[in-house]
Length: 65
Image (cartoon, one colour):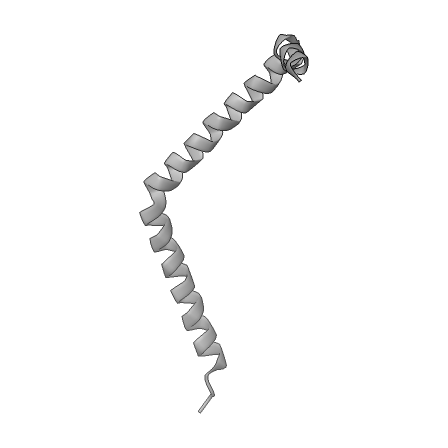
């Protein structure tokens, strides 16, 4: 098992995997930061949309006098 780890570290393929892992980590951190920053406005927009849809459904199913 130790030989496998040594071989993996010295191979060039391991460098590519490490670079992809670092890039993925940066993308994940940026996504979390954006969601945290805009969470209030996203929640407000979501609430407004769902309230609008709820009103439309109620109006569509109301009996016509």
